[in-house]
Length: 103
Image 1 (cartoon, rainbow, N blue to C red):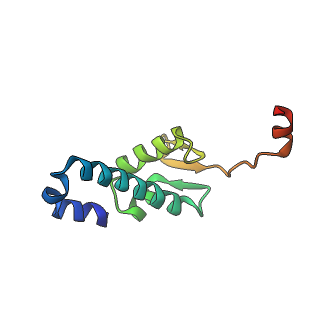
Image 2 (cartoon, rainbow, N blue to C red):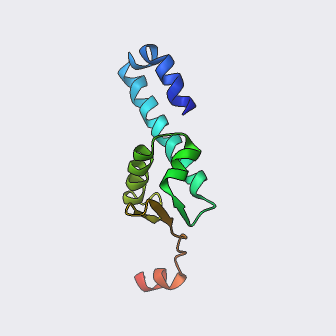
């Protein structure tokens, strides 16, 4: 949220250069993803409204980003939009038998 407020304040200076604008967009998305992962770390199931409240951003933006992260395999979980929660799965450790069977 703070990063976006700085962008709003100094937007003209930062977005005039297309190269800098691309880097800033990439940085913003990276920070957003990292913050979401940190917020979700202690939970196995949490309401989307609570996550949006913790990160202080609109719920629809948080939901959209979480969906992208799940599809990109950056987050293991599922969105249950019917009841407004995200269910986070534990990361599965790949057993050595998997590698052995591939060999």
